[in-house]
Image 1 (cartoon, rainbow, N blue to C red):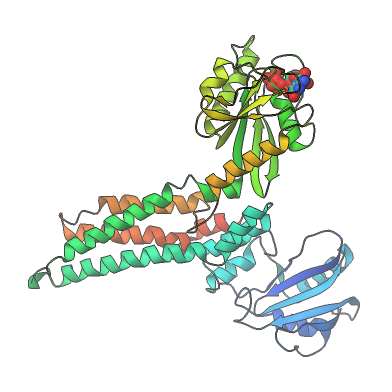
Image 2 (spheres, helix red, strand yellow):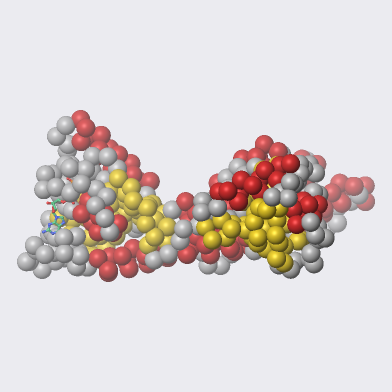
Length: 439
Ligand SMILES: Nc1nc2c(ncn2[C@@H]2O[C@H](COP(=O)(O)OP(=O)(O)OP(=O)(O)O)[C@@H](O)[C@H]2O)c(=O)[nH]1
Ligand SMILES: [Mg+2]
């Protein structure tokens, strides 16, 4: 790792009461001494700091904290300055630090250094980025859990089981002349099969962790004029989509990001399903069907008591059935449509909306709740586990034992990549670039 000393504004940019700057590297302590003209303060204790630049011009009056290596966020010497938030202070400080040979940090550079100094593994570094980005309570909880090492420990447990099995195989190879101890290959085979089953179960988690990170997709579908756009606007609490009495108003997919009871959801309004009158509408219907196909959940909206065949056909286990315009309907409503309970609403009056939101939140939470063991939160994690499973599937203990050992080695290496045990720089670049500067 380079010995360059870096600095960055760690708090949000723009004006604010207090701005926090972080300095990290060998020169951090010397910089603090130069700026305050005082010896280093006691470690990890906030002290008053009057900073001035190299020509004794005052910069600001604030607080300083000194975190000597290795007990710091990055594992290097770190200084934290709490100054007044403002552009002129930031500029004066940057100038002074520049003169002292410090340079602005790249995005994610602090976390990158923390990773290289063994302060955290990659999943924990990713969790910091996720926590900074978290917009809902469920996202925050997932990120905190991963930051705490939940995923690292799970993957490390899998990996150590593999390494253990591998050690047995290698012992067999090394002491082949003495004959293979009874039952050893069976035991290794049993362990490999058990692990493969466990990993497959984790892969078949409906992408819970990734969905929670990126947002759970809900598609609103139904006949033209059923009130889909009106419903979207109700959910969003604003006029996100155009509503009109003309059938075929919506053509493109319109997305709204919402916090649904702590769950991050992306609700998509789509074109009404029918044999379209023109090519543009036909394209809209095609997009509606594609979106419904890709969605995690669907809201099938019916126009009052009219049950149209096109919408009926789309109902499956991941569909909530909504009958809209109950303010107009006088006849009794069906209790079930396609065997699913009906949620009666009026997008116009708002009646039934609370119940609809509660039903949606329940459907989301039963599908995506992050109970039990930690989840894979990124495609990168999933790919590594898939690679591991593929290697385990190839591993044939009845064939040549050296080849079987090699497969186990590859499987363990794939898992090791999740935490960053065997990473190449390019992959690191991709990961740390998601960070903001100062984190
Ligand atoms: N009375 C009543 N009218 C409604 C209700 N919801 C929607 N409407 C009306 O029904 C018409 C169609 O509403 P939209 O929300 O545009 O319907 P849509 O399903 O998006 O229609 P397309 O985009 O054409 O597929 C509009 O005139 C709305 O005002 C409701 O709950 N009650
Ligand atoms: Mg519409």
